Every structure is written in structure tokens, then in C-alpha cells.
Length: 181
Image 1 (cartoon, rainbow, N blue to C red):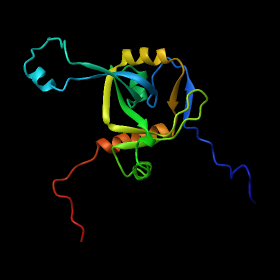
Image 2: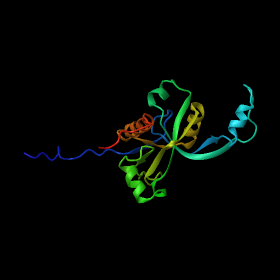
Image 3: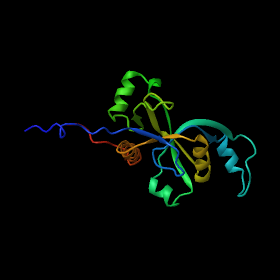
Image 4: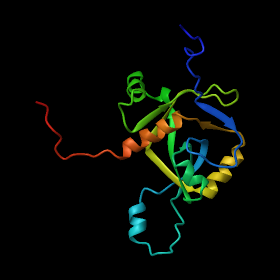
């Protein structure tokens, strides 16, 4: 006997929009402020003393960021710095690159689906695990609140992103990989 209710696949939405007072892993923070150190940071550090203040060279830029810190750490005040990665439109990459990223064949990247929420639409995005930022939690809360309504990645896609991030960082590079025979 064929039960029509059983044959319906669940509709797992990728995103939800809302105004939240808390931060969660998977929160998207478009156009967020980041600090970029000067190119001569090594010489500045080598000539600095503890307590010195950098006056020159620190650049303020904006980037589209997604929170990767664990939600439980954010919620329970276990961290003061929030871990974030940059994301960019998938259309910036070639079709071959997009396909390999979508299939999980390029561990430094993770693709997230387009968003169709009215007023918050965007195309598919690629999260770049090589472009990592940490920002003070207090700043991220203020920035997120200033955004008002924001978009949040939902389970199971949030956990899939987190797993991809973990896989990227747990890689072990061998000096001499096994040869095929």
C-alpha cells in the first residue's frame, strides 16, 4: 500500500530571516567591517614593545562574513572573539570550479545555496575557509543588531558548513604520500 504522506520529502529551508539578540553559527553578516594589517607587519612587530599602539597602516575594509564559531560557545559566553569566514558570489568562479566546490572536491571552499527570501535575495555563495577573521564578540553583536533583520543558515546546512570547515582544518599533509601501485 502506497501512503502519499510517506512519499513526500521534507522541505528543509536553507535560510531564515529575523531579528535576533544572539549570534549563532551560520549567521550571515554582509558588508561587515574587518581590520587588515599592514604589509610590513613583521617589521612593526619586530621593532615593537609590549603595550605599543599601532598608529599607521591598519586598513579598514568590508567583507561579507559568516559566523563559524560554535553557537553554544557564543550563547554561553565561552568566547570573546568570533570566528568568521568570508563568502563571495559563486558566479565569480568558472563553471568547472563551481562544480568541484559543490561536490566537495575543493576542501578550502564550501558552497551555500541561493536565498530567495524577499528583500534578502542573493545567488549561491562560496565560503572561503582560507579567508578567516576574528572579531570581538561585542562588536559583532553591535554590528548584527545594526543590520536589523538578518539571514541565518539553518540545519542541516549549518552543520554541513561546520563539518566542511572542520575537514579543511584537520587535513594532514604528508611529506611523501603513498604511491599508487
